[in-house]
Amino acid sequence: MFLQKIEPELINTIILLAVFIIIRTVGKIAIRKIGIKSTINDARIRLISRYFTFTLLIIFLFIEAFIVGVQLDEISIVFSSVFAVIGVGLFAIWSILSNVTSGVIMFFSFPYKVGDKIKIHDKDYPIEAVIEDIRAFQLHLRIDSGDLVTYPNNLILQKAVTLVQKDAIEDFGDFH
Image 1 (cartoon, rainbow, N blue to C red):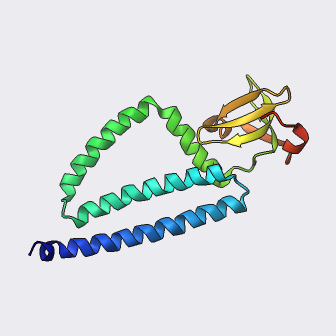
Image 2: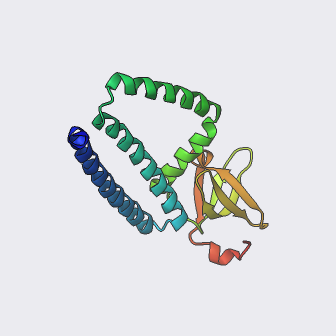
Image 3: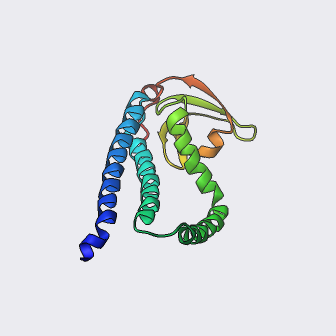
């Protein structure tokens, strides 16, 4: 009797789960192919895949709430409360969110790769360095003296950058 009552929700949940798994798999394959084609290192590919999976999971939970019968006004109260708290928290840490967003943008459209020597045209502190790593929050740059400089992702998208030498890491030496 109970199983007959929840059978439509159970079937819809199974279908939604199957769609979620298919979209996640296709998305991760697409992200991997884009990353390999753009010669992006595996750590960044995995990071973007995690972002994709998390976003897809939030959408899955939202749709699942409708399947089990939660009303739109109930969801809107929960989401507005959650987004209000998140909004206050993100306002307090907006620069971190900005760096993560910039990291995602850089994954798909940053013209420089790990190993390239670049010059950042900053009025106060110009930098000429080799890109050692591109992380979620910052770039790791190795300057000629061997020092490691971390440069925030959001600033690299705001500054003019010149490619000095492609694949300069082989000529630069090993400072790891």
